[in-house]
Image: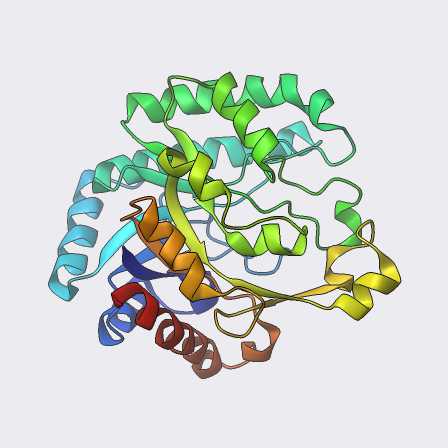
Amino acid sequence: MKLGIQSAILDGLSFEEVIDFAAKNDFECVELMCWPVGKAERKYAGVTHLDVVDFTAQDAERVKAYCKSKNVEISALGYYPNALCPDLDEAQIYIDHIKKVIDASALLGINIVTTFIGNNWHKSVDDNWPRMVEVWGPLLEHAKSKNTKISIENCAMFFTDDEWPAGKNIAYSPKIWRRLFKEFEGYELGLNYDPSHLVWMQMDHEKPWDEFADKMFHAHAKDVTVNRNRLDDVGTMANPLEYHDPRIPGRGDINWQDYIAKMKEVGYDGALCIEVEDADYEGSLDRRKQSLIDSANHLRTFIEG
């Protein structure tokens, strides 16, 4: 298992500075954010540590050489839009950029892209399904032609009132993953698994490793605290941020010793990248860097033990 970082929390640093930070702090890999240049409205989005527009083989060689010189791997290229959003013109922009991320991943020899399936949050899962197939069939065919895996994060993307009632990512539960994998059998579609989302949804966050071990292409390390008093007051139908708080590993409800033992039990040897959305570490760049260091200090004991 390789301990790494998801680079979104290091917004403001260049590609080289992100890799330098990883090397200095003994991280083995980085999930590198590849949003189009410019700021996105969503928190933790819009981060560009690698600009994949017009990305060439020469660019890829430069990136690979720098990573090799620092002994840090790129575990995946990450881009997390909503390719199923109701605005078709907006969705097409996301779809086109996903293709560019796939192309860059192939040029770099990484061959894995982390993203969301997306969701029209005004519709049910069943009503989303035909358009989801229409959008993701060609994207997965493109990825297949580039020998690249698509690794879907399991976040429901329901954190603001404008994402009510269904969130902006359809791939949030084992039942839906099962259906996706059956729909796209023969394609390299898997998970970028984040246990914290199952915790706040009141689900068993270790159990998916038993059924979906072969679909765990990439993994996030993020913790969460569920406030039981607030949950008892508002219920699970409320905006989830009314009753839970994202935390770095070691500051939330997940027992990381048990969780990493489960990952080892099923033979996972891929990337485990720390993703930070802990409000207590927001603000200065030094605090955001410290969040990654503190997370690693908690996790390394269990990974190396």
